[in-house]
Length: 112
Image (cartoon, rainbow, N blue to C red):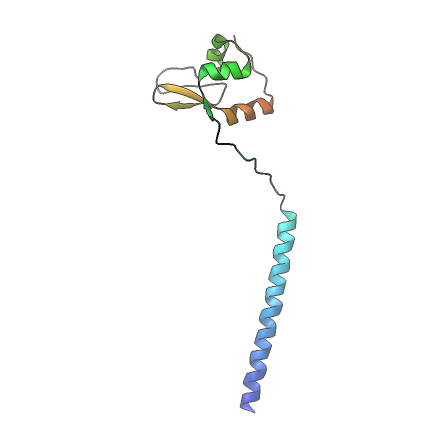
């Protein structure tokens, strides 16, 4: 009698574990379906990703003087820029990907 009770308990426990696992899996499916998927843009790192001021001016089709106005402005320790940039030492570089994203946003800029 005692052996039958243990066997029935083990089978009941196994069935409960299977049902619980199935319910959890169904819950994960519902959560995954409700979360919007995002597309990851693949970046080609075989091409140069950082550009100089002159290269960005050529890329945007503007004069280098106009490009200087779009670049970093300010004193030591504080700089602001219309275009996103990276400063390495004393040199300023612009990320091609960041410039493309800036252009896609379509923000209007007025530079005097």
